[in-house]
Length: 461
Image (cartoon, rainbow, N blue to C red; front, top):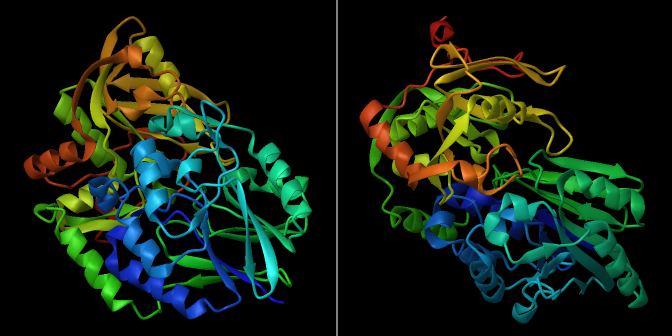
């Protein structure tokens, strides 16, 4: 017996790229055989442009096409509320597993739609036990997950694998949307594999004799795990021949969004990469923050790095859909009234380690900050060129998400909210039409940049 797993995760914006989605589907076809289970580990319905328009339903044609065997829930799978998530579970072909997501009554979330804490699937004569778990911080990361309780995932896995062993399984596998906590599962239990997500760096490692994998985001690759010998392969989908029918279907869906109008032109590509947006000032962050401050006529603006999605650079003719892809969420831009003392605390929140790796989380407009990453403190903070006055009240434009959850910037609360504008991407579109898309690096953030983009003055050298 040589059962194999094909693992995908964090598909997110791949639905907005019909070519890559079609190559991903054909790669699954090519690698799959009678000895293979195809499984997903969360964030495979949102976010993205088509996701925002269809509330995640754009994933259903893909699921129907590739016929996954099992899936667990990621934090973004709750982006459009619990009823939308239930609809996706009910209409999709795979078995959904979720051991630590409960309703307020203590029931398994989605149980009435077929969600189970774990399942046993047979392949090539072997019985494979699969458990699903989701990051308990989802309730803070995804406010529309209100009404759910997230129990301890390590305890939930222990409970389920005990039951699965009693059922006589040959292999134990966890579908995890925990991120860095995958290693805790590997070190705590005797598992064959922890197939992970949430953290976007690809991974193929062995921890405490357990295979631990991640695919990275946006459908660029698949992970193959052989449960017989523990071998792991990462497969890039780039060279696969695209599934022509799926390509045509998603090209049509993208055209039907009504977001294909060109709203601006870019002379020098604006990169959208994780290493840039988490390392300090970057041009895409400046563009978004400038748009918010302009729309609100505020003293300063701030946007979180996690709220900027990776993807193709903005270049040449930029459409409304391209800008939706930068911030594919339906929260509005809001204006908060924040005193100077709170501003210092706010920027102290900006350097953090959400998955064990320190990163800068604030992109700003109308302000400059000097931050000591070793002492973890703000050295200097200016708004409008002047030092921040602790006693003055400032108007801060930001995405409403940061006022609705303490997950990233706990200094900001709903009590700071003064007024609300329109949805984030509509602000970006309006700003692009009026001011263009030509952001530059302006020394807004001083923390010893870990990654950098060429400045305009060096671009032609």
